[in-house]
Amino acid sequence: MTIVPGTWAPADEPHTIGRWLDDRAAASPGKTAIDDRGVTIDYRRLHERAAALASLFVRSGYGPGDRIATLSGNSIDHVVAFFACVKIGVAFVPLSWRLTAAELAAVVDRADPQLILVEEEYAGLASDAISRTRGFAPTAMLGVAGVETHVPSRSGSSGPATAARAVRDDDPALVIFTSGSEGTPKGVVLTHANCFWNNLALDGVVQLTASDVVLCALPQFHVAAWNVQPLLAWWAGATVVLERSFQPDRILQLIPERGVSALMGVPTQYRLLADDVRFPASDLSSLRIAQVGGAPLDEDLRGAWRIRGVELLAGYGLTEAGPNVLTVTAGEGDAAAGTVGAAYPHVDVCIADPATGLPLGAGAIGELWVRGPSVFAGYLGDAAESARARCGEWLRTGDLARRDGSGRYRIVDRVKDIYISGGENIAPAEVERALCTHPHVQAAVAVGVPDRVWGERGVAFVELRPGAACSEDELIAHARDHLASFKVPVRIVPVDELPRSAIDKFARSRLRERARALIQEGSHEHAG
Image (cartoon, rainbow, N blue to C red):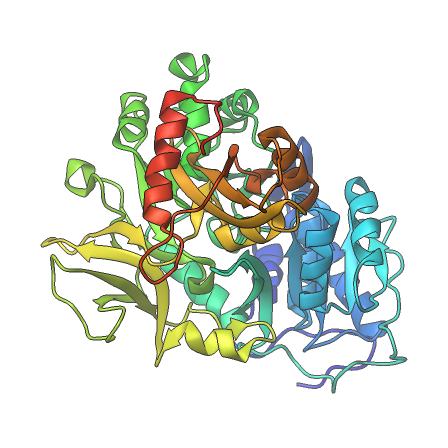
C-alpha cells in the first residue's frame, strides 16, 4: 500500500489499533464512544477527528518511528490524539502530570519526542519541565482549537520523517513510563501487536459488548487506562465514561446514573468506595465486571463488596506484559480467595528459580516469568535493561509467586524493593537519591509498610552527616521539593546510624520492621 504525502491510509496488517476505530465508526457511527463529564462524542465524530488529525500529522512531517508525547488528563481530546497517532504508526507517549517539573524533564529527555501535546490545565508544568530538558521538541495544545487546527512542523524536517508506508504490527503504539528497581524511569514500548493480543486475552475473560458502559478513572498515563477495558470497549462498540480524578462520592453517583457495567481500579480505590458513607445504600445493580489490579486485594475488602453483590476479580499484571497476566474469573468464589487467579488466554507463565532459571513445581516459591505475544518489545533506548528483563523468550517479573494445586497463583513477595502505594509503583532508590541531595543527609533507606487504605506507605530512615542536625519536618519539606507527592514518605526518621548487614548492605528487613512499629504506634519521636 502506498501512502500519498499529506494523507494517511488504513493499515494493511491485521493487528494495528487504528483500524479498530475505522471498523467501529462504520458499524455503529451514532453510538456514543466517550462520555467525558457529560460531553459526549459518537464513533463517527471520534473517527473523523482522529482521521483529520492523522492527516495533519503526516502533512507536518510525522510518521512511523516518531514519538508524540502528551501531558493531559483523561479527555476526549486525549483519545483523539491517541487514535490519530496509531493510525499513522506514531508512538503515543502519555506522560504523568503527577511528577514534579524536574522529574518530568528527565522523562521527556528519555522519551525524546518529536512533538509534545499539552492540555491547558498543565501548560505551566509543561513549560517548566521543557525549560529543564536537554533537547528541543515543538509543543502544541490539545483539542480542536489547538493541534487539531495547526500541527507544528516536525523539527528539522520539511517533509515526512521516514519513508511513507502503512502501519505495521510491530510499530510501537504506546510508550508507558514506569519506575524501575533503581528508580530510573523506563519507557515500556508496546507495539500494535502487543496491544492487540493483550485486548484479545482480556476479551476472553470479561467479554465486553456494545451494550456495556466502562468507567475509566485511572489516569491515562497508566497502561491500564488503555489496555484494561477502554481499548477493548472501543473495539466492541461500548461507551467509555472518562473521569479526571477519583472521587468516591462521584463514582458512586456515576455507576447508577450512567449505568456503569464495567470498572477497573486499584485496591485503594475500591477501599475508598467501600469506606464511603454512601456505599451501603448505593445502587450497584448495573455493575457486572469489577476488576482489581496493581496491588494485593485484602479479603475483608473483597467481602465488603460481596455483601453488595459485586465480585471483585483480583488480577496481576505489569506494564511490560501489556499488562494482563493473571486473573480470577467470575464465579470462582472462595476457591480463588487470596489468589490472583490463573493466566489469561494467550499468556504463558511459569515459576522459576530466580538464581538458576530452572522451572519449579507446584507449591514451590519462585520468580514469576511470563511469555506471549503481549509481552513488550523492550525499553525505549535501553538495550541493556531490555536484555536484563528477559531470559530467552521469558519476561522476568521480579515478583515471587507460588502456584497451588488448582493452577492458581499467589503473589508472595517482590524480588525487587519496589513498594506499591495507591496502585503506584515507588522505587526506594529514587526516594533515597532525593533525600541524599539534602546537605545534612549522608545516607537514606526507604521501605514500604502495610496500610489499610493505600496498600503500602513509604517510611524513610536517614543517616545524618557527623555533627549535623535536621528535623523530620525539614526532611519532608525537602522531599516534597524533589519528589511527586505520592512518592513522599509518610515518615522520614533521622537516625544516628543505619543498620547494615555483614556485607555492609543496608538491612532493609530490620528497617521494615522498625517502620511498621512506628506506624502502628503512631510515634512522632525520632529514632536514634
